[in-house]
Length: 135
Image (cartoon, rainbow, N blue to C red; front, side, top):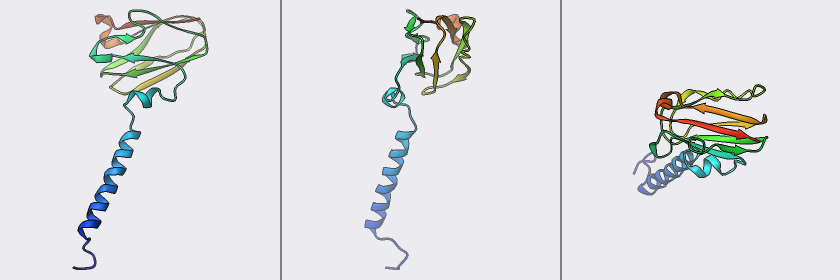
């Protein structure tokens, strides 16, 4: 055997190490709910869960939070955004106007009490609208 030819054992060991590294990096890419919410101390809204055009919570019942609460939106399906249609005069929430796809997240801490109304522009006509009340 030539010196630069690796043995079968060396090849298998390198392959296993590469697989382990790839698996570890894949875990860093996000996408599972535990990673998205595990270290998050706030409320979570799912955007388009199960392919439905809703914000959950928010579409059927307003999400109610105390002032100072952070909210994280997690995209569960593709082609959604958050367009703010109404908020208190002193608020400065810009939403997430660009269209994003599965596993994208957006966070905002709500300091100003009042009612916030937002929509997904591509699906507004299908009822993808939501309300959030900060108390």
